[in-house]
Length: 308
Image 1 (cartoon, rainbow, N blue to C red):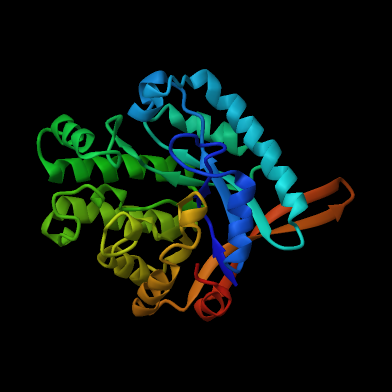
Image 2 (cartoon, rainbow, N blue to C red):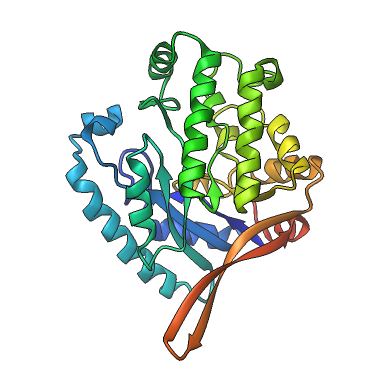
């Protein structure tokens, strides 16, 4: 049973992604996906949080809430239209920029149309760390001029996000390494960083979250998906559970590098992945929809996935 738990479309993420939401769904079906999560980026609460490309395009945060609401309407329509071909989950990527994003993310997640959200970190000390080298350097400077300290700040702010939100899915756990001077470094050489990583992994296990094996790292030039092997092995020792995502930003990314990712997962000794299943219960108080964890053998993903 092939699936992906993290995706975006150009329709609701203009400038950053491509293609319509329906085109993304149609491509997922053509790749043999049986469950596919829609997780557009959440609205932000300050113009200071706009990316350079958004500033250049003349975007304003006043556009984001109406866009998010339109996304939910379209996602609901498409879930109904394709219900016999694909199990569509509706969510969003909850991006923690600073602590005042906690209440905003919780409020968005309380919408009954939302199945789940991904908890992720794209900023450290309010500076994007995965946009380009110039901003990454600026983030290092704001952390005191040391990449080690930047990593510490990243995992400390991630821990605050995990404790506050307890997201069902943790997105690209070690995104910080994308633009790193040495993305494949031995993280145990930085004892403070490694201790924080272990603490964060234990937190995810404690509240029952999932780490995504996110293949976007491979299409962006890294040797391993997120998280890297060192982190995955520690998470496995703690009894952690994984899900799988392409983090697609258009039809060209749907299922990209899934074959390599499955080989990576297999090399870790992981035989089971996890996704969600929506259950509809009819009781005395009416209809109640719940989301349950579903175990999927890796062998089943391999059997049903259709490479592009």
